[in-house]
Image (tube, rainbow, N blue to C red; front, top):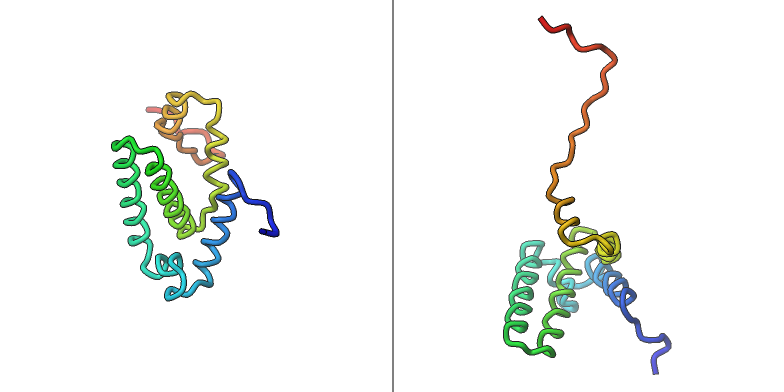
Length: 131
């Protein structure tokens, strides 16, 4: 029997993020799959994310819910590895999802698509007179 209750929801992602970061920093590539991924570099990690995303699409297209869950778990795992490679915590993604809660998808997309105004430097002088 486990000394700790099973993790659920965001706690699972946070714990997984901690374990992945630990393997990134201290893991031995010959003993840890995650450490081995990190030893091969970001491009290799991103290739794995792409492979897993494709497997998610194929599982959904096949209409197999059990396989879809399995493949999404793989995608989330490898996405957490990619996040850790850039020192981003899963909680930051959850916070972004929470921020979007209540926005319509179209409003959120429009806000992302809008070019950001470039701040103009402050000046203490009046503009030159026009000729």
